[in-house]
Length: 489
Image 1 (cartoon, rainbow, N blue to C red):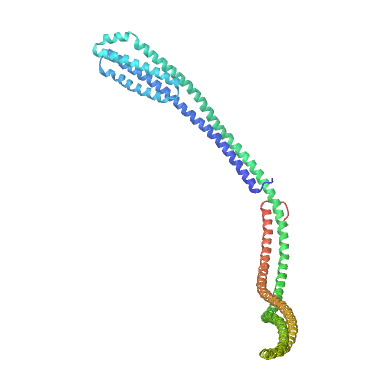
Image 2 (cartoon, rainbow, N blue to C red):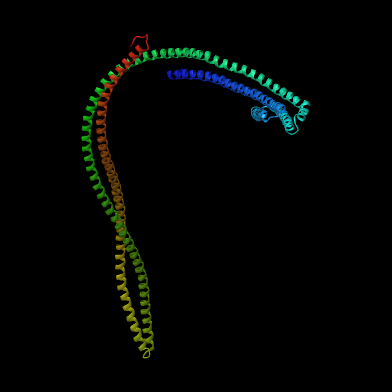
């Protein structure tokens, strides 16, 4: 992966920071070790000083005890009292200094018990000197008990002091080593770090300068190309602006044509809507006519049924008339027979003969009436036949009228649908024309915007040309600043 200039500079700073951190860590470690060694050395010095102070205090106690035993005056107890107070302080200091070492604390406990025994011995002799005199105290001293205790004290303090001095010598070696390490890390580390950083800076500057030279060369070439391109773009922008002006004029003419087409479309829409209304009215009238024809057909069918029933009833009446005519003939025949029988009966049958004559007269009248009814019935049947025939013809005519009315209604329905579709199409055309008008207005606005944008593009390309020229000059100045060996393009 190729590193950028910023990444190279960041890497150089990071490495320099790392070297400084490492050098600081080493120096801090050596300085911390030196400080710790100095603290331990001071600790050992304090241990030695307190041991010496404790021994000196015990010796002062012993000196004061001897002077008081010899002279017997209280003023000789001042060293004893001072030593007794100081030895307690030194023992307390030693316990605070040696609290982390169990062996040394054990030796300190032994020393403290010996000093306590020596203090008891000294206090006993002083008490005896005060109470019983010099001889009594001398007997205690002559036992060498105090001398042996003092020798043990000196031995313990000597051992502890030797150990402390041995530790102190070791501390001196560590202090010298830590101080030498700190001095070496500073004396050699800083020049080495400066040398490494100088070499690293030289390499980074060399690499960055090389890349900058190449980049400046490409920048100069690109600036020259951009300069030529912006000149061409400026020329093209001028031509585009001219073309846009011509297009704007053409669009204005098209807008006027679209307005005229929109007016025509609205007129066609209004005419189509009127035709649709008229066709709808005609369709309703045809529907009413078809319904009327259906009602006439139903009435004709009802009349035909009535005439058929009337014909059937006329036939029934003819049959009844035939029966009545037969009855009249039989009555006439019976009347003749009754007259014959009455003649045969003579005077007694005379009244019966009158009845027979009357029956015969009635039979004749019935026959004549029957003949008249038959004549009328025949006329009725002829009229009924004519009515049936006329009804059938009327029924056929009505059926034909119903069929033709239905076909006419279907034609008018199709015409109405066609007119409706034409009206919808005219409406859509009108809407489309209106949308075209809106679109043309938008196109006009857009062309104006394009015209303005073209003007701005012309100005922008002029500015870009100036900027490209400035970029070209900047590339030349950068090449001069870094000492580029390439000729400026």
